[in-house]
Each structure stands twice: as structure tokens, then as C-alpha cells.
Amino acid sequence: MCNECDATIDELAHPPELMFDAEGRHPYTFWQSTTWKGYPKPLQVNITLYWNKTIELTDNIVITFESGRPDLMILEKSLDYGRTWQPYQYYATDCLNAFNMEPKTVRDLSQQTVLEIICTEEYSTGYMANSKILHFEIKDRFAFFAGPRLHNMASLYGQLDTTKNLRDFFTVTDLRIRLLRPATGELYVDPQHLTRYFYAISDIKVVGR
Image 1 (tube, rainbow, N blue to C red):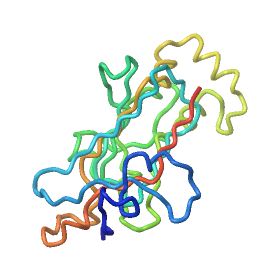
Image 2 (image 1 turned 135 degrees about the horizontal axis):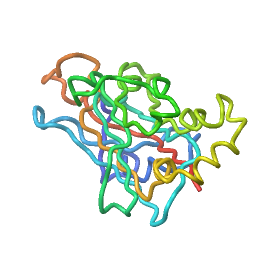
Image 3 (image 1 turned 90 degrees about the vertical axis):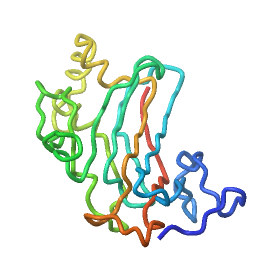
């Protein structure tokens, strides 16, 4: 259930900057969207991160949800400072129904298919309190070139230096998180309890150079 929220009162507000403050604070801080009071109109929210420079990603993108992980989400990237966007990964409870894509994980890829844009169901199931973390796996993709324990980073760097498509894949100027459907925990939305449905994010971690 959504706790009481009021953007005009500091103690009850959950503004966007709380997605990027220091972890480990008690109580934990988080951003929270409005609830799904407009159902059946979709509850959709875009979160855009921009750095005004080029970033080469070096670790997994990690999003920590204070609510359940969304039923539908798209992670997008830009290489031209937000002028154009392309999908990075799709997330859904049912990839085939939502995006007409067969569900996959990064473990299904190979060195030859590492650039494939996939839809995963791995992070869009489970409404339990401990189902909070969502990843975009950078290190698992690195492992196709550097080995499962990333011991051969020289091989990875060699591929990045000589293969533009591969280098571009791990490079961004902006990221956009498109939240398309909140966690419901069931097949159907209960219109009598719309305050159950919302997005809340306590942390977004992006590591790059």
C-alpha cells in the first residue's frame, strides 16, 4: 500500500532527487510516482539521466525499486545527447504478449550475439518485498570476451578498440527508463484498490568512465 505522500511537506515528499542520494540512510529515501488513480488509462513515467558527455559503461546498471518491480519497462539509450533513442533492453512479465519478443536472458547470448536487444522476464516477476533489484547486465556481456571471471580484460579492451559497434553498445550520453506498467502481482488490476499500484525507486546506479 502506498504510504501518505504530500509533495508540499518535506517529511512526506518523495521527489526525483531521492533516487540518487547516498545509500544506507535510515529511513531509506525514495522517489515515488502518483498512484494509478487514472486506471484504465496507462500509468507511464519516463526517467531520463543525462551527463552532457560520453560515458563508457563499466559495470551493471542497477535500479532498486522501493515498490515491486514493474510489469513492463524499457531501458533506452542515446548516443547523441537525447536527440535520438534506441532500446537497450525490454523487461516484461510476458515478453511475447507485451513486445512480441521471445524471452531471453544474457546467459542465452554468445560472443556473436552479444549486441542483441533482448526482452527478459527475469526481473519483472514477483511482488514480494525482497524483489526490488533490476539489472542491465554489463559484466555478463564483458564475460563473453574477458572470461567468466573477467580475468582477461586485455581481450575485451582489444575488441572494444577495434570493433566500433561493440564499443558503441557500451557507450551512452543519456539513459531513459520508461516505466510502462507498475507491479500488480496479479493478472488483473483491482479497481477498488488503485493505491496499491505505483512506481517507487530508491536508487539508480550507473558506473562508467
